[in-house]
Amino acid sequence: MKSILDKQDFSNLDKNEIIELLQLRGSDELNLFKKANKIRLRYRGDRVYLRGIIEYSNICKKNCLYCGIRSGNKNLTRYTIKDEEFYEAVNFAIKHRYGSIVIQSGENTSTAFIDKMTEYIKEIKRISIGKLGITLSLGEQSKETYQRWYEAGAHRYLLRIEESHPELYKKLHPQDDIHDFDKRYRCLVDLKEIGYQLGTGIMIGLPYQTIEHLADDLIFMKNLDIDMCGMGPYIEHPDTPLYKYKNNLLPIKERFSLTLKMIAILRLMMPDINIAATTAMQAIDPMGREKALQAGANVLMPNITPKKYRDEYLLYKNKPNIDKNPDDNICCIESRIRIAGFRIGYDEWGDSLHYFRNKKGI
Ligand code: SAH
Ligand code: SF4
Image (tube, rainbow, N blue to C red; front, side, top):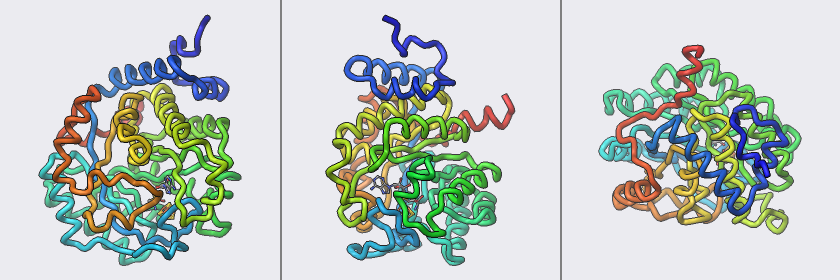
């Protein structure tokens, strides 16, 4: 019998075909991962690019109903990394030849925050002699702010749409002006217009979310013509309003396997983009990130946040702490990647080839 996996061209999968792929099980599911890995090897080679992630601050003005560091959660100590700690993390990334860093934070639109980030971006460029690539994941900001950070030297931005259906987005956020789907979407357009390599993504296994939603989410990313993607399973956090749905969610293993399939299908649909093997995968399965790499992902984001802050940046519960001391783990990362069948792209930015192809108008 002819299988959907026999298709020659996956670049224009329709919704029904995506749903069929999302429902594959057993050996068919494994064949989907193999196919995605083959496409990844053909278009992106066997290199895995490292982006050391610095979780700069857990102070957030937003109150997303799923997130552990939402402003309404009083059960945590708020922190902001100090300058010397920030630069220590940057130097760690340089020393270990990570090609890039990601600065991530709770959302803050104050002038002091914007100025501080501008200063950091310029300084990272200076001390790494332009070597470190810089990705920002600092939430929704004005177009002027995005422009300013771009001119300072940041060149990639990650802003997950979280869920691409406005009506479902509404159910996951408080009903007010600062949690507005259209506004978030506008930010994605602004970032693209400025010239950033654009990254977005969603959470998988959210309350109310169906397989049809997930298929549409993939089509949303394809239509937005993204350069990078970070998607991960939704993991409930006890100090959040959505926790009350914990008994109605897909089992955690299902969320994990659906995420692998989402990664694989996106790789088939968009062969030359960057796709991250996210930390949330590892929170569920100790080999989660490796499995994501083997299903089509090509970027890894080791946590280089100072150890003392890590327990306070709990977006979800069970964040893995195995890399609490980054120094102990660089060999570990290297051997894990090697065993999974890949090589680290040391000192490489590992930019999205998709971005440059588009720039050249090819
Ligand atoms: N404040 C910024 C960046 C930090 S949050 C922003 O929101 O864009 C980074 C990501 O963590 C979010 O985009 C969201 O997708 C993810 N996240 C938050 N809560 C989560 C949860 N309970 N399970 C899984 N991922 C979660
Ligand atoms: Fe803040 Fe981001 Fe968490 Fe929303 S997901 S509460 S914006 S840190």
